[in-house]
Length: 398
Image 1 (cartoon, rainbow, N blue to C red):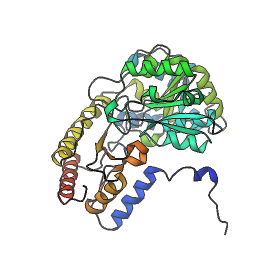
Image 2: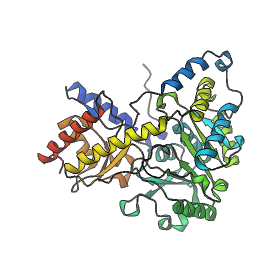
Image 3: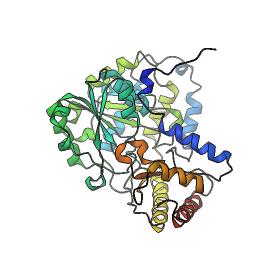
Image 4: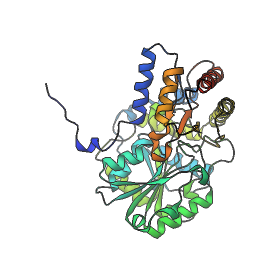
């Protein structure tokens, strides 16, 4: 038997956070616990029927059964992105500033691999944050530098707190608004400060904007709408959250043409692009939303309000997030987020994500996802609230 030894590259990163969650949930299920999974943010509502029907038609086109030789994505897809950006954000793009991705995660990881190669290459990473930014920096051989996201600063990084010697060495900066896991939204003034910082220190800004359409108040703006942003930045999007298409794996990145070309060249050595039928359907979805994003916002708003009410009644200090389908909850006392989440699962069957899994500054928080599966989602959320109240009443979570 061949024994596969772990390579040093993989030893730099912990086991992927959401793989750990799935394992913990399965173990709890095997013990006979009734599980309410508020851990992973995977939309529970199916892809809209009109999009599925379009796929039924597109997949029968024999022209789509071959490699996509365009390298950047089908013209119909990139043109749809250009139109969507114009109508949604007021940002004018050229199709050469658009690259199709096999989901947002793939593009975020590969832009790091394309540009980072040694420990002197510093990547400015928000903390807490989606683990892909930090983990792929480590895998690529670079050095992540945390930018703390604190409640007292509205979960925005303090750029003035970044030391001069770090800023001068930084190659990339990752941002994510609307933000996972905190649910916060960045104002235009902050993006203007980012642009000024990036120009001063010659840093490429990578803005992960996957949750731009899951908002409850003012529509979030595009980073690229700020003057000077296109010169130093790119923005990543996905159809996963907006159209409930997580399993379809389709997204895109737009912005600085030189960076788009660099990522395109890098990806040519890695993959052969998005299945062309899916690109056709993604273009159709962007141009024919049929009211779906609005319906999803109302559904998540209702779920958010129920869960916030339940958590407040349980005695937790919870703010109502202005965007995303997550609730970022500060824990009572000095309890470890992993211990709290572990005990909650073992005692009640409720799965939440420990904040420490998103970084050092996520400690003291847990994340609730509002994408719970079931026929009576409102009832399930209220049941989760009931279990948490009992858990806290027994003193288990304090």
